[in-house]
Image 1: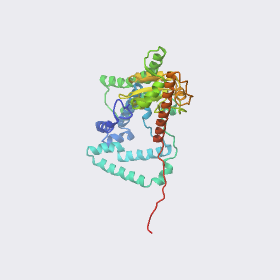
Image 2 (image 1 turned 180 degrees about the horizontal axis):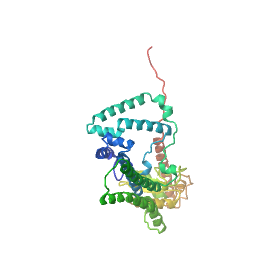
Image 3 (image 1 turned 120 degrees about the vertical axis):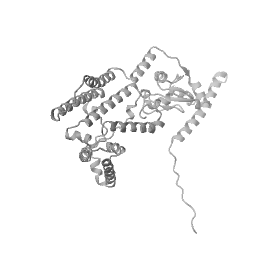
Image 4 (image 1 turned 30 degrees about the horizontal axis):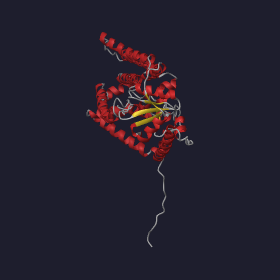
Length: 398
């Protein structure tokens, strides 16, 4: 399920997985007692802290999972959507929801969970929620200015606090453990909770407290999958531990003229824009080749990849990186993009006809120049926005 990298779970299964996760989530809510208004509002009255404990447990578990999956390269952290923060409406909306939670005994999610198990009070709460949604939608223009006030973008708590995600993860785990200990003390002190902490229960609490911290520390101190990937590429390049098929100017021109559909040409120049290009080439910056969205491009089963650049070193490193990610038989163009355009497209005088090899090469490059320029023109036309042609209507009643 997105943003899990596409080579692990196909996007076509997103809705199936979401459906199964929704069933699991609802089951866990019911098992935690979240279909009961008494248990839910117990947090506000101080006699039952199950809600607080479940939310802290869920938060720490999700946080550790996200950090671990991102560290292993299973999750594309850049693709995770972070809701924009509008501080004014967040405060006002939080107060309204909190008041509704206390009076109604449910939040929107738990009301649906309770409705699913047949609770009548949840039915009326859901009806009220729907009326509130429709009312807000109808009168949104009147609330819009307040609703979008105080836009803070999409910050994360660790970035606001100036901490690394791992440091904040450890901090949140410590806060969660303190909350568990503090709420247990409150229940025992003021509500005479006689629940006894058995040896097994204490052991489970200790394990549940230590495991997240240990995992986060391991994530913090060990190199991520991407860091190991780049390190392997640099090591192989330094030790010349590679062997690739190569192409010179004329071989590349020939293949583009007659077998272009058998290849994917990738320009890995580390620049935002390219001043000059090889026909049919796509641009992927070398420094971004480890991103999950480029996996399918680099690992192709029916086409071979030719790496080009204005820096021959980058072309070789890109081929190594493609192999490390699972690509098969990458090809390295030996020259530079500038060399290709200068030798193929630049007009040169005809050589002395006494040297047949020179004459044949000149004729080939003239032919290649014409055909590749035609290919380049077609590609530009395909990529350009459609032209709008305004025609004046003719005819009508006489």
